[in-house]
Length: 431
View 1: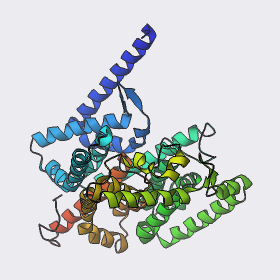
View 2: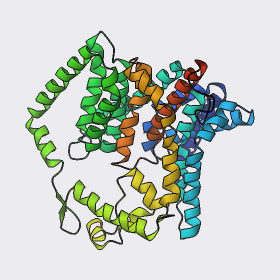
View 3: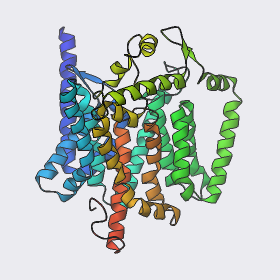
View 4: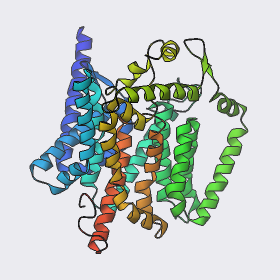
């Protein structure tokens, strides 16, 4: 190692240590502020820094620092922390099922720490978001994450990219999730505004999301509109949004380059074996191998992070990828095929908890046009639909959005409990 290289490494280590110290300090003194920062900087998960044989990111440092603060509060007997952990007991069982699978199947992947870390923001949101004000600020922090990702994409526009597709820190598909989440949250926030100019922010974010040419982004945007937004957006603002969408579509389709890219999006490309395939063809090959993996090991799956090498056992997949294999492109099926029923059942049971407070959220959005509740829930359909089309199990943004919705459920249940609407044991945790 040269002196210059040693100096650079030492400097990076000092900066990392200082940042980690600051994060730990904030997690003890201002934990909620650190949570907002963590939510806003979640896309920095894609900025990898090599540490020995590992790769860490700024988002990893924030989450680990936040975790230290949570342990401090747990040691002091903070009830809210223990309740948040209890609400995530099913996810702990999912991780445990993966670990048991390592023993049974004789495989191992150290990236098992990734889903365990990714879940932390969800736990923290349930612990620290205790009021509508907290929910509104956290929702805007999640929106800020999408804005940061989009800003990075704009700053690096024209430098690389995938076939002219717009993308930020996470590339086109994951940027579509982050930016679409920001678009629907900001739309919910200004849903009842009497100043149409304020609709420009969600409109711009929607345009940037569509510029990724991600089909996941389109599907999730529609899902969020029909599940949440159209219940709270005023009639006048719906007209303005329709006019804006029509103008944006007309402008985009008037450009031949954009029309060509839309046509090329689903065209088949030649792969390593000389065969032409598109995304749909690849997904059919993957589904075939998922079925095979589940039939061979329905209880434990093929092992965490083992599906991609397992998929290369298919001669066609092996030839088309040069032996690399494919991911599942579906989070729900990923959990099933890699962890078996022992992992999938607790994964689904975790989300079953949301149903206990959904009637309160439904009433707040449909009857009261509650924009705070809508902002907290708006991105949930985005990530739920995206999870069916891509792999998001390891990503902080996915679990942060899921946690925000669950924290909103906690707040709504607490409000209704104080009004005597629900019995004390109506949900799994108090707020």
